[in-house]
Length: 334
Image (cartoon, rainbow, N blue to C red):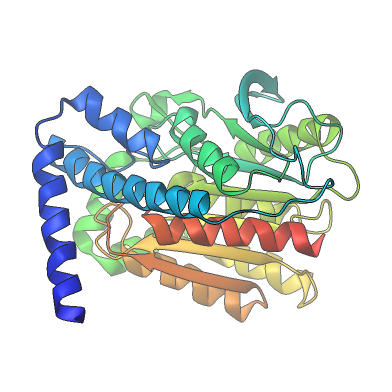
């Protein structure tokens, strides 16, 4: 029976691959976005096809779940009726950053605010699908995703970057393997201090707009955004409570500073981290997140570590499920 199910699953995946291969690049991206996934790490069309197959499978699962829900009558009381709200997107400048605000603009109080920082040479629009997917999964929750846009950096070859990345140096470190990357992440990159200042100003602006005393704050990011989100969270220890940190396909930076900051904060800082990484990542080595996990765990941070079979990307359905659970746990604790 299990072998038959596995054979059927493999056949379905093969059929989906054949179907998406006929799509244009624009159609592939639309399919990926509709499933709540992003195109981070997709360089060639073959990468988009692989991601689109994953999106096709996810949409199929969602359709099955919706059909199942339609077959099972739901009992709703008056308090839950009408709890689902529309998730909308607005643009606003917060501090030094142009931001997209994706969430519930029509409520007096939010259940959670989530800051997500995109990766190097990327756009904040990459994470609009994630916000919409969380809205679909948690229709009764009221939240706001804040998606800042990194400035273009001449020092980073004209790419959008939170702080300077010496692309050639990173490529050289990658060629050296684990030892090269391990050395690089101990050095302090140019522009990091300025980034810290700007990020803190943005958080203050967000506090003024959305955060009451009891509204939890999550800070997350992808790739360089993951490094920046974690660094910002450690900088805020003792100044402003961060209820959770999400590091997607990231790595530690200035590890000695991180260690000192967390050690001085003691074991009672209450930091929680969701960390995810693809085992086939050829941009930031998979081992890098393991280093970050060990560093944080040894400093008393509560780390949930999830991996997936993909490369430098957010990941599939079980990663989305982990994000949902992390958000739910954060709201339940507050």
